[in-house]
Length: 539
Image 1 (cartoon, rainbow, N blue to C red):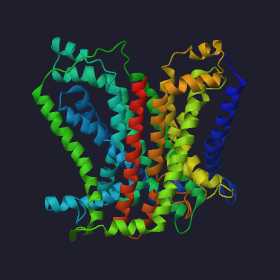
Image 2 (cartoon, helix red, strand yellow; image 1 turned 90 degrees about the horizontal axis):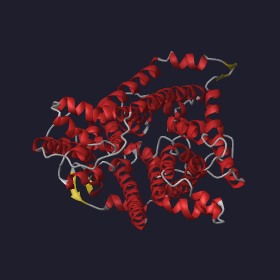
Image 3 (cartoon, rainbow, N blue to C red; image 1 turned 90 degrees about the vertical axis):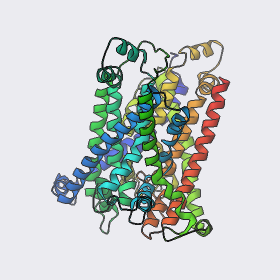
Image 4 (cartoon, rainbow, N blue to C red; image 1 turned 120 degrees about the vertical axis):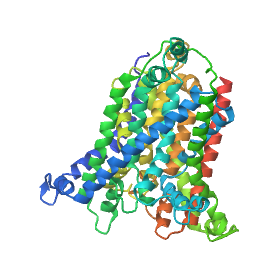
C-alpha cells in the first residue's frame, strides 16, 4: 500500500470528527442523561423504569413477538432462497420472487399497519373475499404479520446471497454416496448456511424489536418498547430521563445481537472454489417449492393490494364506484406538496453526502495504510447496533438548545449515521476485490493518490456507488423511527405526515402518500438499476 500522505489525513480527520460529533458524543450524552436526576446522578431512573410493571411488560412483549417474528421470517426467507437456488421452478416465477420480495422495502413501515387493517379488518378487502373475519388484527396478530413482512426482504437478501457461495456439487456427491434426503439436506445446505441463518434470525429480531412504524399504526393495547419510548418522550408529560433509560435498554438486545453475529461468523463455510452445476430434475420438489413460493409471495403482496384500490373508490368498502376525487383533493393541498418536497430534499441530501462519506471511509480503510483506519469498522459496528429511535433521541438531547434543532440538517445527519453500515460494507467489499497495486502504479506514472482514486478506483466502483446511493435514498424516504423525535412542522416529511393523518383517520390520504413514496422509490430504484447495468456492461 502507498505511504500515508497529507491528503489522506485531510479526508480521514473530518470523517473521524464527524462520527465523534454525531455518533459517539450524542450516545454519551444519552447515557449520562439516563443517570441524571434532580438530586444529581444516581440509579434511581433505572430503578424507576425496572419497577414499572407496564414498561417491563412492554419489553417482554417486544422480546416475545420479535423472537417469533425472527423464527418465521428466517424460515420463509430460507424457503424462498432455496426455491431460487436449489430447484428448477419456472424462471418467470424466480424473477417474480426476486422483484416482489423487495416491494415492502419501498414503503414506510407505518403504512403496513393501515394496509393490514384494510385487508383483515371487519370491513377489510380479504375479509370480504373470504366472507369472514379470520382473526383480530389489532395487537399481537397484526404486529406479527407486519413484522414478518417488514423483515422478510432483508433476511431473504442475506440468505439468498449466501446460497451463491454453496458448491452444489456436494449435493450430487451426497446423493451418489447414498445419503438420505434429510441427511443430505442437513450436511450440504443447512450446515454451510448455519451462520447465515443465525444472522438472518438476529437481523429480523433487531429490526422488529426497534421498529416504531408498525406498532404505531396497529399495536393497539399490545404495548411494545418502541411505543413506550414514544409515549414517555412525547406524551402529555414528557420524562426525558426515563426516556433515556428506555433508550439505553433498547440498545442491549442489539448489542447482544451483534456479539452473536460475530460468533456465528465462525460457523460459516468457505469453499476453495465453486462448481457451476445445474440442479437435477425433480418434479415433486420443483412443483412443491413453486407452489409454496407463490403462496408466500402472493400472501405478502395481497396485503398491500388494498392500498392501491381504496383511494380510487368513493368510500371503501361501502361505495365502490371509481373516483379520482381523493387523489385530486390530496394533491391540491399545499401541505402535501411541501412535505413531499421536504422528503425529496432530505433523501437526496442524505444519499449524496452519505455515499460520499461511506465511500471515502471505505477507501481509507481498504486502500491506504493510514494509522487508525480500522476505526471505521468500529464506527460501522456501532451504527449497525444503534436503533433509529435511540439515535434520534440522543440528537434531541444533544442539540436541543442549538441552532441545529428543528432543521433539515439534523435529519440528514441522523439518516447518514443511521444507515451508514450497509453502504460502507458495500464499498469496502467492492474496493477489497480490486488490484492492490493500482495506487502504486498510478504514483509511478506521476498521478497523485487523489487522481488514482478519481480515475481508477471510482470508475471501477461505479456500480457499487450507485447501489449505495439507492440504499440511502430509499431508506431516507421510508424512515419514521429515526426522525420521529427530530421533525417539526417546518421539516415534516411524508412518513411523519402519515403518522399525523392517523389521528384524523384519513386513510385515503395515508394510502395516497404511501403510493407517492412507493412510486418515488420505485423510479429511483429502476434508474439506479439501469445505470448499474450500463456501468457493468462498459467494464
